[in-house]
Structure formats: C-alpha cells, structure tokens
Image (cartoon, rainbow, N blue to C red; front, side, top):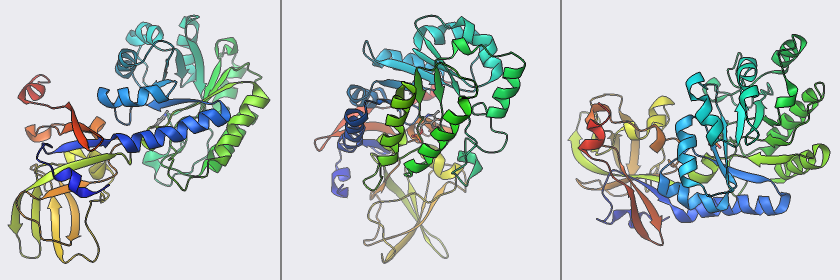
Length: 382
Ligand SMILES: Cc1ncc(COP(=O)(O)O)c(C=O)c1O
C-alpha cells in the first residue's frame, strides 16, 4: 500500500481505514480452503465489527461467531437467511438465555455449571456444544493463552471426568465441540496437535457429535502452510463424520487496518523532538495494554529525523515510541499506523472526551465513510 493515498484531504483524521482489497484477499484464502475441504468458515466479529465491514465479509462466510448477546444481535441484523450465528463465552447470564437461544444457531457452553443449567433449555432450532480446553499452551504470554494454568476457557478432561462420574452431564444434549487455544500463530501443526488430543480424550465419553469448531487464533499470511489445517479438517470429517467450522478474526481484518493521524504539535524538548498526534492510545488500546511499538509507514532505522510520537490525552504514558523518518515532520504531517485492523476499533474509548476516529472503507482508491462520531456519541453514554 502506498502512503500517498492516505494524504487526501477527503480523509478526516484520526481515521480507521479498512482496505477492502486486503480483506478480500484474506477471505479468498478462506473460500479456497472451503472449496478444498468443505469446511465452514465463520468470521469472529469481536476483532472488528463496523457494520460496513461486516457487509463486505458476509458474502464469503457461512456465518459469524460471537461472544455476547449484543454481538449476536448485531450478527442477526447483518446476516442473511441461511447464514448461522455461533456463540461461546464464559459470561452467559441467566437473564439473557432466552434471547441468546432465540438468536444463535450454535451455542457453545464453557463449564459444567452452564451445561447443567442450560443444555436442557436449548430448543430444536439451536445446536449445543461444549468448549474443551486442550491444555496445550503455544503462547508464552499468559494474557493471550487460553490454556494458561487454571484457565476459565473451556473444560479440561479432568473436569469432564469429574462431572461425568457424578452424572452431572447429559451427553445427549451436546452436538458439538469447540476449541480455541492459540493467538496469532501461523503454525497449523499446533492446531492439528490440539485436535488430535481433544478427539482422543473425548473418545472415552463416546459422545455423538455433529460438528467441531476449531476457533480462531491463526493468521493466514502468504507464508502460512495450510496443509496441517486441511489434513485436520479432512481427518475430522472422515473419522467422525462431522461438520468443521473455523472462526478467524485477526486473519481477516488485522493487516487490512490502518489508523491515519495528523501531527498537531511539535515540541522541542531537551533530548527529543516530540510530535503530538490528533490520536491517542485510546484509539490503539492494545498498544498500551501490551506495551508494544506499533508499525508506522515511512519510518526507517536509517531515517535522519527522529521524533517521539505521542498521543494527545493527559496521560504521560500515552506514547507510541521513538521513530525515525526520512523527511522532517511538520504541523499537519500524516502518520499512518499499519496492521491495526483487529482489536483496536472494538476496544477504543473516549477517555478525556477525545472523539473516536471516523471509520472508512478504502474501495478502488476512494474512501467510503462508514461511521463518524460527534459530541452526541460522547454525551449519550453519560
Ligand atoms: C473463541 C474465539 N474464537 C475466535 C477468536 C478469534 O481469534 P483471532 O482474532 O485471533 O483469529 C477468539 C479470539 O479471542 C476467540 O476467543
């Protein structure tokens, strides 16, 4: 992507920009996988959920996967007849069950307690599954690892065995199995290993399952070898006669997303020149949460002009880091953050009363405004 496209005055900053061509390239990979293996691809709407974006993704997937009642309501609004809504969360609430069952075609339970309370309520229109925790950790940072010690995410085989021995589980109500135990991996070998472990552990209980959901947590870049994924899908279909779902999020939206901002002040300090942007880490919350330095277009280790880039909120730690540019920055220069399409827009907030970025879809070199916020958006939450 050339940076010049982001310099048009048509684009109000700060702005999230989703490049439709990149999204479609990622979705084409899913479509090819579907053609090759007959798996059923879903999109995990938690990663980015602007309705204009969901409309772009919708034609390529069998449905959406959700994490809450509100996401399920949004999915129901956007999807067409025949597309399916899937949900899993550790956070089901008693007062939301009726709506969730009414909206969702596939409901995955997370614990013995949920299973006992809810499985019997699921009607013939919904299929009930159980999330299993394969206890295989591939992520070194516990904050991203669904299999961290004492994880809340999915039942372990030990928990299953205990509940089963107490006759707390009604296996007849369970038609599916869900796993999700990775993050930003390109190693589908790890998925294969997890699935084999889960299916072998499950055989002890002999359930009659109709579907397996392989979760998300994997990327689909050009270097990704999909063979272990294809093999796993075919193995599940042939050995167990099940439908196989996958539900990527970041693989679709991550690389397609940019945050475009403008330099609104330059401060000469003792050791640095500080460039203040019209954005803030409120708009890139994962940068602050996980303290990493985001990638910015047109920066280079060899650049002559060094700046500390900071956000415009009151927080002194609202900064992105030190970057070198080939040309000096000026008031009004545009700074373009790359690879921020996933888990940024959905987590953004209005701390300090700073407005949210507008969102745009980049289609055939022109920007289509998806959403813009105003004082009313700020005020209506108070
Ligand atoms: C159950 C489940 N499915 C799918 C996803 C999507 O993961 P990703 O965006 O990494 O593909 C997540 C992410 O947290 C998840 O928890």
